[in-house]
Each structure stands twice: as C-alpha cells, then as structure tokens.
Image 1: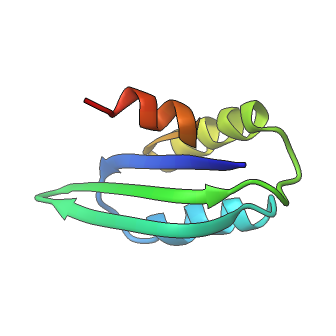
Image 2: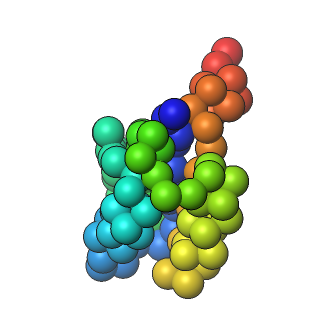
Length: 89
C-alpha cells in the first residue's frame, strides 16, 4: 500500500532528516520526495510504501501528526487513493 505524506511549516534545519528518520524507524520506504521553500515556509510531499511498515496507516498517521507538532510542523499521512481523489479535477 502507498501513502502520501505532506509536511508544511516554517523552514528550519533538519526537517527532512527528522521526518525521513521517523519513517525509516517504522520501516516505511520513501519512493519519491519533492520539497520547496516558499520565502520562510517549507513544503514537502513524499510518496511512501507502507508494505513493510510496522504499524497500520491510521496509527502511523496519528504518530506523524504528533511528531510534526513536536518539531513545529504540520505532518499529514493519507492513503494514496484518498489523496488522488481529493486532488483531482
């Protein structure tokens, strides 16, 4: 199963490292990543593979949300199909 991880917030050092380490510790594989800085704001979208993950999508999403709060970022995880449905015209 694949999911989309979005990370948004004020730019600071170590965001990619913290998020990718957090995911790797849970056996989540990053398939693709795109990030940009818009003035002082950081935005990142990751496509991840959950087939080897150590927990279910809902639990991972909640943990990512809490981790994001700890690092001052908004972190959301959605099943790829839901993300596609929400962002199609």
